[in-house]
Length: 119
Image (cartoon, rainbow, N blue to C red; front, top):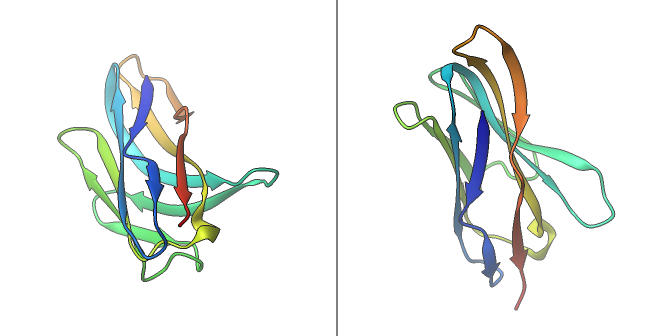
């Protein structure tokens, strides 16, 4: 199983980005998909989680600005980020709880993608 993020880059303050994460491999079921972020010199922090078919949770720092969504057919998760500020500058990581086709269940991290908010 592999998670691959895309959609990062450089954006000006107040701008928007949409991150994508696609899970591939022998996947039977995905229990949740989430986003974390880690700024330089800081710990990795929770951003948003999509659980099951419809439950979304967010860190207080992104509520009202970020939206997590899922495409269950594509084994994908998205993070729409609006009204970005320099404080949102981080490496963003996709994280998922996956049941593989061989019956094993594990949690996986993507490789991370840089988001930089700067004028």
